[in-house]
Image (cartoon, rainbow, N blue to C red; front, top):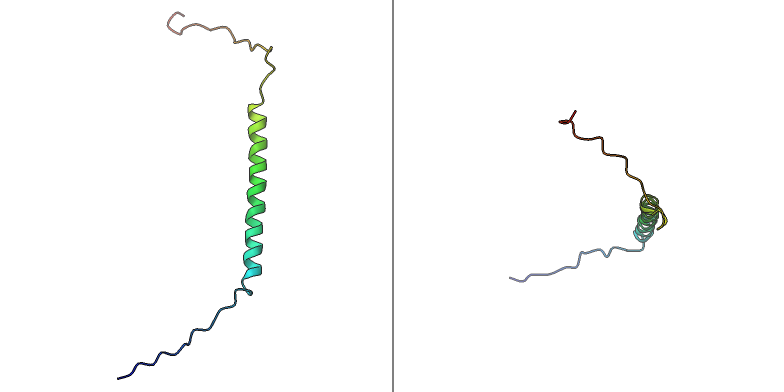
Length: 68
């Protein structure tokens, strides 16, 4: 009994899927960069500190409810 092995595998061309992959990779990269820039802007806006000589005045304590 002899076994014959035939090569029926058709080589796939990566050139046909390369433009789609490159386009998808570029879209993901651009989206990530935009997200990083937007989140950095939000972080800077929310944590922007006051000058060191600025003192924040706390409102007076209204007192306990039990004392009223």
